[in-house]
Length: 89
Image 1 (spheres, rainbow, N blue to C red):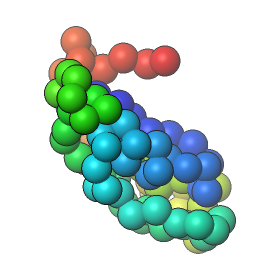
Image 2: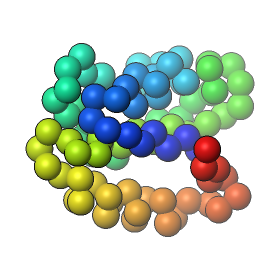
Image 3: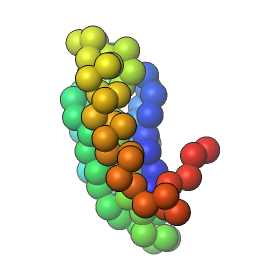
């Protein structure tokens, strides 16, 4: 499981698409918030490796001031992860 976290406009969606070699997440070319909800996509790591789930999240300090709302939803999602599958790096 790869959890993509960071500031709005930081490239989280783009990184998720590159890791999966699939266009699963909408990308933005500006600092406005593109991702407005938590999204999960499954694929293979770099297209041919280990099966992986990538979780794209709205950015911190997003342009619509929704950080607290997103953090609450993120905590709800993370608490249900299998503990042996979640790695923090």
